[in-house]
Amino acid sequence: MTTHATAASTTNPFPRALWPRVAALLLVVYVVYACAQMEISWQRVHVGLDNAHRFFSRLFPPNFERWELLVKGLLESLEIAVLASALGIVLALPIGLAAARNLMPPWVSWPARAITILARSFHPVIVAILFVKAVGFGALAGILALSVASIGFIGKLFAEAIEEISDKQVEAVRATGAPFLSVLAYGVLPQVFSRFIGFATYQLDSNLRNSTMVGIVGAGGIGGTLFAAFQRFDYDYVCAILISIIALIMLGEILATAVRAIFIENATLADLLRGRRRAMRLRAMEDE
Image 1 (tube, rainbow, N blue to C red):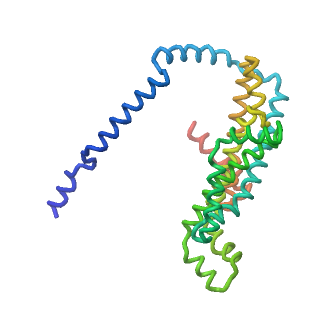
Image 2: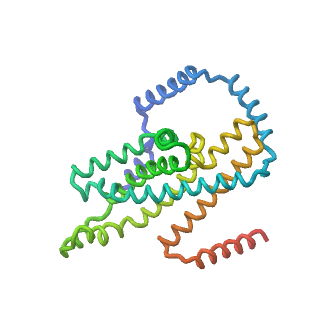
Image 3: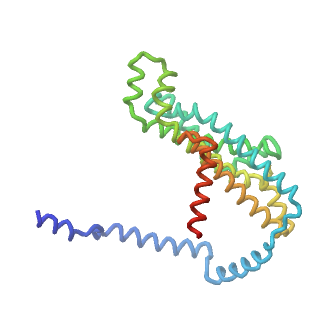
């Protein structure tokens, strides 16, 4: 017993092997080669740092004088994110269900998986450019672009969550002679509901961020205002826009946390406010 324990303690948890070292050496060589191909040098980094110092010095102090235009752009970005999330989630539910290989035959699951792969193939900005060309400038292009992204993300994760459920509950519902919709309602959805809420809130948060980018290509939102401010070299207003975007993302995170608490932990609005007040009291006591 002691001999085995001593042998286990002296065994090297990271055994030396030739191929990991060769792979690490090849990685280092490729990094050096890529830097040389992209003309990355210490001189360019030094010049870039000087330019960055001048740029950031022109950002402050932020200029909130045109707050009406700022609020209008933020509200449009929020509307784009909420509508795109709602539309994408509604469409992703049946696609994700059809893509689950433990519930559907291959001739149904594989086309559904192909749809989710196609929806994730391109960045939302690229999809927004396509929809701008198709439906014109404005928020509609942004809503459609982010809806496509939501279908790809939610559909894939929802299908994977269904494939990881326990078959015992599903078989128990089937044994009662229940139809397929009842099997879904009582055997499948209760096992994936909490994860689906997490997926949905994360996608809303992602769409909030992406809604500020698609406006750069003319798909509505605060991104158009930000791009115009850059073109005018109006950097103090750029700083105000960036601060407002950060505030919007933080607000979205707070709302997402509240939604998860309500649907997963069965919390009420009073519980949320009570928990916040308790946290504020504890923080005050720690400060004292």
